[in-house]
Amino acid sequence: MGCFPCFDSSSDGELLYPKQGGGGGGGGGNGTGGRTAAAASSSGVGAREERPMVPPRVEKLPAGAEKARAKGNAGMKELSDLRDANGNVLSAQTFTFRQLTAATRNFREECFIGEGGFGRVYKGRLDGGQVVAIKQLNRDGNQGNKEFLVEVLMLSLLHHQNLVNLVGYCADGEQRLLVYEYMPLGSLEDHLHDLPPDKEPLDWNTRMKIAAGAAKGLEYLHDKAQPPVIYRDFKSSNILLGDDFHPKLSDFGLAKLGPVGDKSHVSTRVMGTYGYCAPEYAMTGQLTVKSDVYSFGVVLLELITGRKAIDSTRPHGEQNLVSWVCYVEIIHNHLVFPTQYFSNKLSLVDNQISVSLMLLS
Image (cartoon, rainbow, N blue to C red; front, side, top):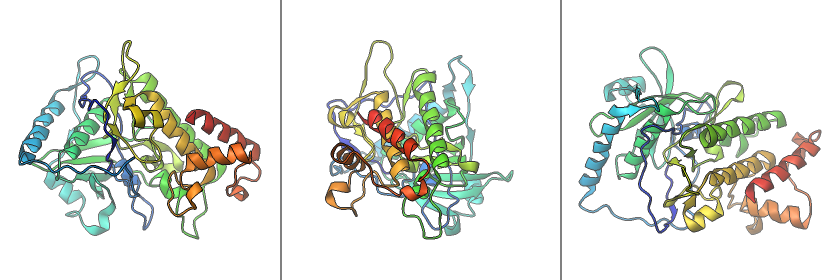
């Protein structure tokens, strides 16, 4: 995923490993040609830049890098005692490194579908013939180990038609790999931005279908999972698309258990992707489900306008999508975007813009 802390809050917030609650989802592969698969983004591979809210502070691992690695290895014990709310042992399928090497034909370049800070993602075929996306953890540093544990634990506990399925994992020696269902149409980002000349943009109905499915995935995490789960990395590259553009949320390495009881928020170090991170969360480190709602509003604007959340190639006043939309709506009371694709849907477009702004407020 390659996400960096955006700010540091006063409380780092311990990583929570659910024993009885829910968790998040992972990712699939990319079926789109030369683009680095954000489908792999499910796999935590954000092929696009994931910018910290401020320049990332890079800290050297002390001589204790081995200690950090040992701590990550100790966390593997969590996987052998994974239980649901009723105390039943859950067990994700385990693979050996040799099995996954065979599945990717020794991680050949033609099987490579994406890369990010977390590591590289490959398309593979298991012994039974199932096509999968395999994410290989970059072994440098401890952050990846934490994300690995969170993703396995969460995806083993949470299941929904709009969350990507975890097939299994590999924790063989120092190797850490995650195996997901393969998502043939890649990520939403692949179908919104930097399209080749011969590729038609998504039609309006497909865009709204994707938005509705992604919203159902968030609803499940926020309202159905107990305790609630805050996704914390909702963005277009983490929405993977299956057959008929069926959307699934992926990449749950940053997911966090939400507040329970009389608590209103969870205090944690701010993590996420620049342009999608809710301002109040970025400023205070206080995490609530509303942080995900804000991010959903940003993605909805991407779907409506076809613009990126952050685009440094545009004029200064248009680089931040949310700021630009708010300015245009307030000053000019209209929004300029490729309406030729939605010429018969303008009233619906206007309604969705209003919904987006409500989500961002």
